[in-house]
Length: 242
Image (cartoon, helix red, strand yellow):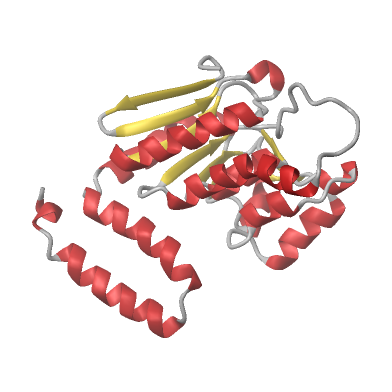
């Protein structure tokens, strides 16, 4: 398992990498549990997190390892089984620091969900996304829940119902990507983004993530009050001068 997921830390920056290119970087339930632990750990002590994968594909979806055909489990048991996915989604959302995603190729189903959950998503122009679940007679609400708040309703419904593969430029218009660059410029673009994030003081980088997460569900009035309080708290901190 340790070879399939890599975690490196340098200068307070943690890089988490899916290392299963021969399997399209698909993620098994066991890998999802480990990824959750990695993100929860990194979110506590990193300046920010980089999330990427090895090879041509970002993530082709979930890996169904050891699944046996037969009767489906009872509903309560099935709900518990799927908690490994929702726990991972929560690790992205609850991270105290931003997560920078790097998408170099195919990102489908679960892979599209993971790309959507990163706070900044830098894509190669070779990146492709889809939610193919309904074409396999699978309810797509797990992946949909990851994209909600990231892409608009019309884009989400289109991707869900048609299962069409969208290119990187379309993903950018949908809000699924932050930036699209030529494939041979991807590494340099990511390095430039890393430099920009690294210069931001830790209190500010955490406060921006906190506000973007918490204020989403507040009324405009409450979000304004929250922003006012957080702005004064962070900008008066001596740690902003470090």
